[in-house]
Length: 560
Image (cartoon, rainbow, N blue to C red; front, side):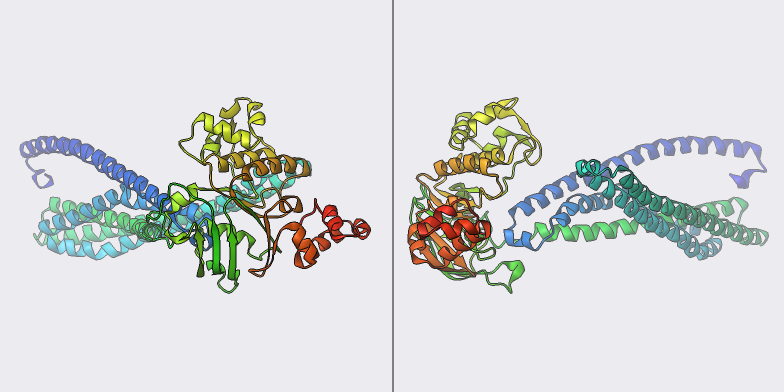
């Protein structure tokens, strides 16, 4: 067109034709750009949702040993941040990268078609322009990361203060916390100022390189034009195409960082997705219609995978008859709770075996096994939802009648009806609004709703006050009837009624028998009660003349 400036008629015709084609190209660009961004983003979101679901499902299917060695914070962070990085790398960024590379390639090809000499000179300036844009992208990423970290610190302070607002207000530390938050924001502001200076300096450098390259290309183009090697219009075509290609290449390079981050994030995510748990609940096994509850520990030895240098159990042997209640007592770390966890197949023994109704526990279908086991822990874990939904976690298809029946057995029915919406009362995270005893009774109802044959109680009353303990203990006494009960004991009131008391020390059984029998032995169990009583009320102990009097005086005591 520029080459036809000397002929007005020709240039008018060319302008008209070019305008029509440009309008068509503009419309096509709109359609292509829309579908480019839409389709890449749509596919990326769909992939991210699928990967997120696979990742979460894989986490829930892992064995407990893996969780002992894996940070929960890392898992939660990966669930959001790493999945987001994969989505970014597979989404619109990928579409932009393809677009930029196509622009670069087509620009260079068109330039060489019109004049290869000028294109070579233009191509020589490409690395400088790309370097400038690459530096700009790197600076942007560095300062964006620093800014995010600075604001994350400020957010951490805000979250810490808001989560403990009662303590802050109680001690009158509002101004102190405002100043602490302000200092963190000041750090973020300084990072922002440095970022602005660096970014604007980089932009100035980029424009300097671009215009210097344009000046060089025009100088050489005019020289070629004087030698009749190129038409004036072709100079503009070559310069425009090469510059556009250079800018596109520079814009594409920072996107490579997104792809590398997405690749690394995918590696971390798929390590979990592809991991096969040692104790795999998806592998089938025995599914007996009924479980009697006869349990035997045969020469069981065990170490936690995260602490292989510490032997928790060694040659542990114990028989538990169906329908009996066995209480485990002993110092902290002796292996009491380990028995409960092994029974649920959270872990497997390193040596020996656990027998249930004549079959090795490893041979049972894990979901089926756990459906016949009820568990009540020291700290009741309730989830955001209604009271009814929390109880139904023990049996997802339970009817309202079954829910109320389990609640009555747990002595929870009456206080539940006193709630604003009864069983449909919404509980916040952790069961907010309920007392410790009420939470524990809901946990007991959840454990009983499936009518389990085996009941595991891991210090179920140790965190309660005396009043709450009496109600919960009453519920537990009711729950234990007709079931095989393994009880990790904290207080003597929960121990003395057991059919068998097992005293554990350093992973071995040192004594076992009924309360009166162990008192009569005047062995380890007797000394434990003596020690507890002496620490709580030395005078009362001195007045107690017989072992049975010792036991009565210590009946409300804790072992450890």
